[in-house]
Image (cartoon, rainbow, N blue to C red):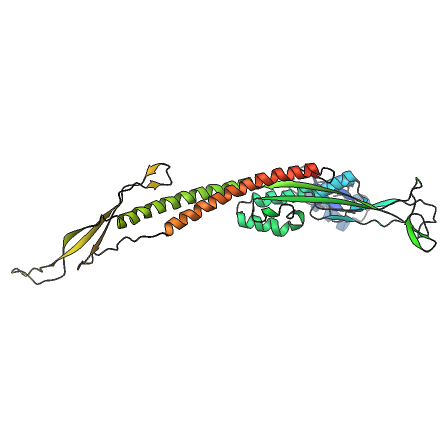
Length: 384
């Protein structure tokens, strides 16, 4: 592919770009053409028809590169994974591993089938299913975990809905309610099966013989790559928030306990208070005489010591509560009321903090169990 571009005369360099085209990366080199020269070229082409007077403005330099370099440039859609070597597959998975790779081979060995005259020995062909690599899966996990707008609920939803085929929720079933740690897996299964079968006197079939003369048998060779991941920074952020919530809830509870105690300890006193308001006539000079009234001020006191949860070991100021009744001038105030809701809120905040601690311990315990399990079954899989 060739493209041309006219630039300012002060720019004296070429631009290179890569384009995906089949199994090649084409390096397109575009030389700079001065505006004045380009204008002259257009004029000369309209007057002179001889080919030698035309000025070449572009050149196409193509270079065929390896399939690995091609994939490294992000060219994934037209790559036939069945033709890739193990090393090339690793490159493909690292750059294009957004989907599972399935390769079903259909080959003909000994026997009468198209393209084979029966002289070739039977062999086991390798068909395989490769899930998205562990790196591809964990890159998604880290992306969601480190998102600026992430919270525990959205993180849990994203990993559950989008990675349900790459999570082992059966082995770690007790982690169903724990959003912070999960086991992520990537499976690679190779299915080897003989290319032909042979009928034995019309009674039954046997698999063909290999080069060593032995009858071949189908078998599956599978590997499981596993990562036990704990979103610790997300947990830590939630834990810090839970501590602050618990401290504030504790302080609110202690303040309410002061009121509850003051209301119930029999410390209430009453005091008459004079007040003046309204119009009760005029004096000899014609001035308005305000009406005289008396209202009652009630006082309660808490004697016990209560503490501020935001500052460990710091007592709250002594509590004295007052309210007024019987006022004619609008000085009545509400009496403090007893309540248990603050105590319930504090208990809920404390329980939330303890649940986070339990979840952290659970993650640690299950991580050790997972390591032990996969170490014991080292022949079945690998733990990363």
